[in-house]
Image (cartoon, rainbow, N blue to C red; front, side, top):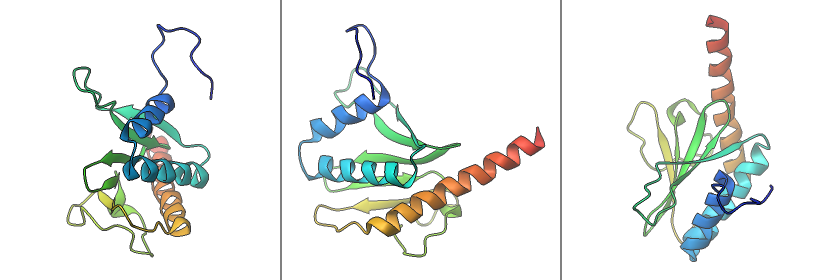
Length: 145
């Protein structure tokens, strides 16, 4: 990662996520940082974005991880760090990590609470499964074109 050389340049999405984690300064920042590291380990080609930024708000935006489409978002609330998987209903979850947004036809989420232990191997497998869903759907789209 390269640092900006000019003050007039906007921070990169990765730098904005760094700022978000630092601004949290509690267990939520630590949890989001750990989940981010696991996402990067599971998919070294992941692209980080920050979406839904509000200039008038002190919030820096929502971290988003993508690979041939959105994998998941990382939202923080007072009592939880929520990772919402854009196509979670299509993702195999043999370890039953999804524990939120289970009724919808598309998304699924994982709410991490303060003292939760992250099953790192199951989480990385879930990330890889989400990437596989995205890449298989991207392949179908390119064949139609």
